Image 1 (cartoon, one colour):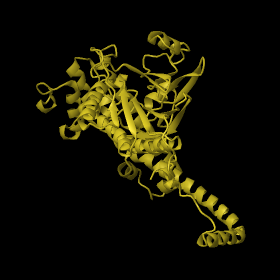
Image 2 (tube, one colour; image 1 turned 180 degrees about the vertical axis):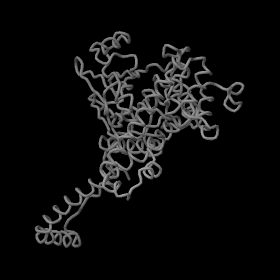
Image 3 (spheres, one colour; image 1 turned 135 degrees about the vertical axis):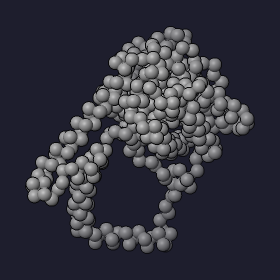
Length: 438
């Protein structure tokens, strides 16, 4: 019989019920498997038919296997100490939790890397020591010249732009999946990491804007602003916020991203479309029962209201009736935005299909969804561009798509004469150009 505290409360939704069980699992004395049973009961699904059973079984098997292998390797390595009684096997089990084995392995790997790097630096240092005398003499000559004002150096931070032209910096924001938590050896992601990556992206955009004498930044969200909650049975175990909190935090990320440019004197236009993760209610067929009922609509209607109330002539949010697609023309270049979940990746005719629907030639078809950057040239210099994801790769990309890509976002430079090109900005390892940002 289900304890009263485990039972759904009056009016409690499936999402709220699952989040309450998961967050209070220790207090309620619940395991993930029991939570799976309770959620199945809530929806009237048998355990044998549920994705909970399969997912939890796979996790438990993999967890135990990894631990046993790690423990066996440790015992074999130190079997001499074990045989002498210096190491207690039961002590290993009690002192080293399963989750620490991976961390211990990573620490050993990092230690070996550091040793290698130190040896390399020592070799380089010895090389420069042999060359030190002429280098010091040259540096002294430069110092004396600077003191005598014989050499004038230009401070790149103080350079002034020429008159602004009509070049537009087109920014594609894609696949934020706010609320998603990734903890893999090849990638980690959460809300704090999302903010850090967006800050790196902003600095790169500022660099490109200054290099192109542009004060116009056009931003489009390509969907999957939030992770959602009900797409998969195991999804509640991989998120850090409720769906309402995800919407709130995604809106804050987008607004802060835009307003930082506005505060620096740039003109900012904002538009957006929804993705499959933004849908409020998922049916058995994987789609929303109500058309255009999604988180991006809520976010952008709120931002549109904020824009009107603030009465800031440098921040404009496009008025949109639908959020499944959006198109615009910038300096004669026609761009159409779709999330990409309804597109066939290898369909070479999708550019022409979209052009036929619009009744005019699309120059750039900009998409997200695939979580990696891909640009394909079609016809007369038209491009299909898949943008990278702020999240980077996750287990789904590894198993289903067979693609592990770094976290990235996409920028297009669209010059006033209609010339354009795209850039993929790697946000896991990008070197920020700070010299132009002050």
